Structures are given as C-alpha cells and as structure tokens.
Amino acid sequence: MAFLQLRGVEKFFGAHRAIKGIDLTIEKGEFVVFVGPSGCGKSTLLRLIAGLESIDGGTLTLDGRDITRLPSAKRDLAMVFQSYALYPHMTVAENMSFALRLAKEDPDVIQKKVERAAEILNLGPYLERLPKALSGGQRQRVAIGRAIVRAPKVFLFDEPLSNLDAALRGQTRVEIAKLHRELGATSIYVTHDQVEAMTLADRVVVLRDGAIEQVGTPMELYDRPANRFVAQFIGTPQMNVVESAEVPLAGTQGKHAAFVGMRPEALRLTAVGRGQISARVELIEALGAETLVYLHTQRGAQIVLRQNERTALTPGEAVGVDVDMAHLHLFDADGRLLAAHH
Amino acid sequence: MSAPITLRIAPALAVRTVAAWLVALLIFFPIAFMLLTSFKTELQAISVSTMWHFTPTLENYTLVQSRSDYLLYAKNSVITSVVSTLLGLLIAAPAAYSMAFFPSRRTKDILMWMLGTKMMPAVGALVPVYVLAQSSSLLDTRLGLIIVFTLSNLPLMVWMLYSHFKEIPPDILEACRMDGANLWDECRHVLLPLSLGGLASTGLLCLVLSWNEAFWSLNLTAAHAGTLAALIASYSSPEGLFWAKLSAASVMAIAPIVVFGWFSQKQLVQGLTFGAVK
Image (tube, rainbow over all chains, first blue to last red):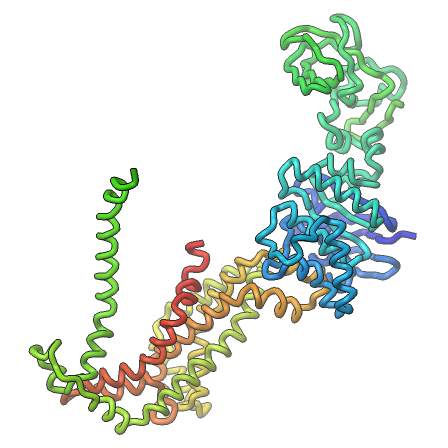
C-alpha cells in the first residue's frame, strides 16, 4: 500500500498554475529525490507536502490519512532546510529537542534521544553550543539531528547541501546516504544537482514546469529516458541529441525518428573515413581518468565523446566516430522516446 | 613605524572630537539653561548680569509643588504613556507579524498609507477628535488620552516592528511549525525571544513619544487627566515674570523620562538605526 500518495496535486500562484496536477506514490522507507532545473516547482511541491503552502487541488494522503488540509504541525513530517533554519537563541541540544519538548515528552526520554542523535551525527561535543559557534557543516548536521530525534513519518530535505562547499557537500551526501540506510526512514529530497539525485535516490522524480517528466530508478532514467528533456538532464556531460540524419539508421523506427540520442560513452574515436560520423576535433578536456573530446560533425552538430584512454589528438584534426548502434535513443519530433536500442 | 601614522591621524581625530563636543553642547544648551534658570529667582532669570553668577534657590520648586498637584500630573503621564505603549504593542505586533511573514500584494501600500497618516498635522484632526471625545464622554479622561496616544503611535510601531520581524528568516518560523508548534508556541518560543530587542526599543520610543506629547494633552484634558506637558504649559503666562517657575516645572516634568532615556539609550538608538546600519 502506498505510504505517501499525491493525487492530482495542484498549486496556483495568482493565475499561474505552478504545480500541474501531480500524481505520485511513495512507498514506506523509500528515498525519493525531486530533481529539475530551477523554477520547475520541485521546492514548491515539497512545501505542499510539508504543509507550508496550501494545496489548491487534489489530495495528499499519508499512511492512510488524508492530510491535504492539515497544518504542518500536525502532519508528523520533519524538514531540513537549505538555510538550516536553526533556532539561533537555543543551544544545539535545545534545537534538537524542541519538537519533543513541545510534544511534552518525558525529559529522560528526550535526553536519550538527543544523545543518540548527537552520537550518530558526531555532535556530542557541541551540544551546549549556540548555532552561531558552529561551522556550516555542523549546523547542517544539527538540522538533520533535529529531524532525526523526532522519528517522523517522512523526512523532507530542501536542497540541504547547496550552502556547503564542494568537499563538504560530497562528504555530507555520503553521510545522508548512510543515515538513510541505517534508519530506513521514508525521505523526500529536493535538489537541482543530478549527482545528488543519482547517488542518493531509490527513485528519482524529474520535474519540469510543475509537471512530472519521468519517475524511475537512477539507472532507468539514465538508460531509458522517456524524453529528450530527461535524456539531457541526467548525465554529465549530457547526452548528445542530434538530428536523425546525422546517423545512418536502419528499420522502421529509424524512419520515424526525428532525433537520435547518444551518450558520450557510446561514441568511440576511429580513423578518418571510418565510423558512422565524420567530425573535426574542437576541444579536448583531459581529466586524467577520462578524456572528453568535443567534436564538430560534418553536418554541423556539436557532440561530445567520453573515453578512458588519453589522446594525442589536437583541435582541428579530422576524425571518424564509431557509434555504438545498440545504445541509441530515438526521439520523435516532439522529443518523446520512440525506442531505446539495447 | 607607528609613530608617524599616529601623528597623521591625530589632527583628524581632534577635529572630530571638538566638533562632536560642540554639537553635543549646542543640543544640550537649552536643557542646561533651563536647569540653571529653575534655580534662580524670577528677577535673576531675566537679568543678563546674573546669567552664570547667582545664589541657587529652591523656591520655584516649592512654589510649583504648592500651586499645582505635581504628583497627579506625573501619575497621569505615567499611566497614559505606559498603558498606551502596552496597548500599542499588543495591536502593532500581530499587524507587523502578518505583514512581515504573510505579505500580500497590497502590504507595501498599506504600510505606506499608514505612514502617510503621520504626514497630516494633528491640528487637522483636532475638531473631529474633540467632538468624538466629547460625545463619548472621554474629554479630560486618561482613557481618552490613552486611545489617542495609542492610535497616533500605531503607524510608527507597526513600521518598527515590521522591520524588526523582517530581519528574522521566515525559514526559522517554518521550521518551528514543522516541529509541531502552533501559533502560540511559535510566538512564545521563537518569535518573542528573537524580537525582544525590537519590541523593547519600539516600546521605549513610544513611551518617550507619549510622555512628550503635548498637543493632544493640552487640547483634550484639563484638571483631571492633564499630563506633565499640560502642567508646564500652565506656567506660561502672557504677562508677569514666569521663566523661573516655568523652568522648574519643566525640569520636574522631563526629569523622569530623561533619567529613563539615559539608561535605555542604547536600546533606543539600536531600535532606530536597526536595518539601516546593519
């Protein structure tokens, strides 16, 4: 049975329909990531679930209970904010215990829960400090701790890592993944960073303009994107999508295809005159473990190729490109997937 | 190494110090002059030769005390300013809260409109207010004065509290709602502790404004609800010598609020420059 269910959820800002009737089912214990470009409505959708914005249409049920009109305080959800949103006048311990104290829990139980959370998050030495005496990473851990001690039905994360620097972001991402494995709590995580989406999620929900483009496991989205948008949103460097005339296609599907998508690793450099595409090297990015080769095809398309070997090529040189015809994504003129060749 | 630098900075610092002292003395001069005059006899008060050299006397103070009931006026001042301030905070805080945290498209307009009412000279509303007070038997009552003080300070209070609330990240209040807090919990455990400074400075300022208010107390009160401002005014007269007695009455009227302001000046200045300097 669905744990959290959204049925036709809508949100209007004035006349603008910001969330366009979302249907989504989340199972207990699942880690679901909402991802999409800025302005796609992912944070709004999370705030609708949190009850921080009112739902204008549709229903929201949690664990069999309709919570569409329930105030945030009564939904039994915890949220980790991008800005941490710690109570500046309370110590770390007070911040983490605030919800329990409001709920009039037994002080001994509260203390145990706070200590346990502090232990999990390595916050033990900081319990008596005020948030201003903590680093950004520590503050984010307190914010997570504040959610943990409550043992809520669902954890909501609103871009929790975007205020951290790159190194800390990677580290905290790993910690969140570990935490989810240990606690097995149902989580919804909003991010614009597709690496976070791919590494953390059981399932990813790709949003655009307030509507769902595709829902699936990270690998499903990578291997079988439902349309051009998802294909190009997931994966770095992004999938090459070129007009179908660029690549010689066989079969009936080939005739209907308007665009062909090729992951950078589905391309291989070969000698001039060989392979399906003739191109000229524009730029080489040698990253050590892998090398990205940016190419300009004879027909005028820009494509990028990824290989593990280093290359002695220089910009301007002519090359042939061998396409792995078994890993093509064919899209119609509207950008919808015709078929993924696998 | 540091010696030449010190020498270069020193003149600028000296000029600034002298300028600051000059300005401070200029502002303080009327108060000092009033204080001196209150200890002179009426004749000394108008004579130039005794500007600085005179034998201080307390006769004006005893005269003021015997001629009018200082304590009654003082009590009226305290009650009207304290109650109107508390009442104002009670009304202004929820208004500022909703405008700061749940703004609508019209919030800015409402704020501007409220401030706009302060642009109108008080005398423009004198007749209607007087008639209203008269017909509701509020003339010469403390209640009448409290209502007028509260309403006339309200725009400023809402504005000050609004800008204080604006400094609190709305995320914190949302986090608190997610933590299970209802509106009361939210105000008590989070909003109040975080805006205590703002509430205090707003309250202090309005207390001072109400205390100093003269126009309405002169026009709406007489013997019963008159405040210290009305007491001072009663010592001004079209003929005869009254400067020394007027000064003594003024000193007695402003002394409590000056002492009060002295101890709370840090809060006051902080409240007024909040947001502008930060």
